[in-house]
Image 1 (cartoon, rainbow, N blue to C red):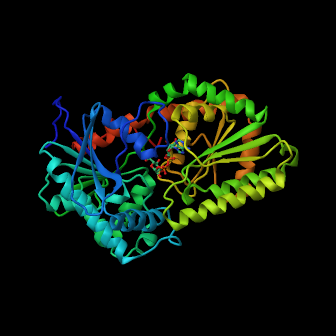
Image 2 (cartoon, rainbow, N blue to C red):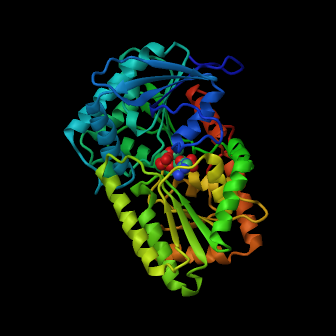
Image 3 (spheres, rainbow, N blue to C red):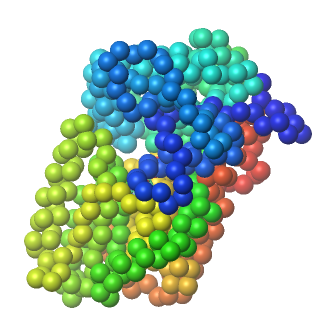
Length: 477
Ligand code: ADQ
């Protein structure tokens, strides 16, 4: 299966992820997660099928496929039972694997029903997508929801080239071993031909686990020899659709959003944060750091504003309800302490915005605050860079614990746990001379532009096709 060098016939791509997000026109309204944004542009060129859960409930699972054709992308979706959604999506995916993969074993719930639901739904995915797969198709599975899917497809006789890309971090071995049946889960992943991670850090953790816990040999090229096969494990750092985002940033809609926000801050310096409302994003620590900055620099109080845009996410999971309450309390506390009759320091907004407007907001900001406690990559950091005016760019303050920090080394890198460190970085960013801002921005922009989502897709798909490398370019340099 697959194509050989010199063969111009493009293999069809079958993308499988938890949710399918129907492609939207550039600038269309609504919040899309990083995964959706990235895959839409990848699929458009590859006349592929995107399979996943519709997001809808059904009282009894039938496996009925809802097929829709949309430009060059065909989507195929299934509905899931309420118990599936509880145990697989809200359960094992978002109460077990998500916190564990973000190093939060304090929030990780180990519940046998979740594990069973996860297996059941992965099997349902395998049963439903199996009839769609033709012999030459490349199968590309996404993320922590579907780690064992490849092994289930193999058990049904699928011999196609299959790859997995993990959008989250991969946790250190000593944390991962707290997961019951961790060996079974990771061993099932070795049925893929390619396993992709966002960074070399996550890749190295994975290889460490494979050697230490599974006793397998890792070859010099980082491939794993497993049951007579060669499994390629590699880093493929994801990027944004730079061309699309630049176009959105240049639109009239972006300009209007920019002007509206600029005039509302009345000459004050603007800091911006844009994140799904998730505990991994470090929002509480960010608010506290901003509060510390205001306390340490009373002269600046009244001269800086933080706009935090945070659409709610995974609201059925208790830890997400808690983070929401926690942030409301912190916002109230900091605003109470530092507001004046005509001024509020934190504007906290719980909704999504069309991408063009988001681009305008980024461009209006003097500082982008991207301070996750742990993040696979983080696309907001890259969008912030792409949206800036190169003549007068804002400064990116970026957590050293985001995967993006390995590429965006010209940002001000911070430890998001240290309110002092982040507060100092805000001071430094506000004082940064124009020439330094321009110099840093030019380097950041080159990285964001060169390692965009198209580069990521091409690199992964050629690895999936069994081709050697990505042209010798190392995305982390
Ligand atoms: P996420 O955790 O969702 O993605 P991120 O990479 O920052 O995180 O992507 C978020 C996306 O949602 C961005 O494109 C952003 O513009 C958009 N978004 C956020 N808030 C929005 C709002 N209010 N309105 C409109 N759009 C909004 C996961 C991993 C990341 C990884 C991505 C892609 O957790 O580490 O970078 O997948 O692999």
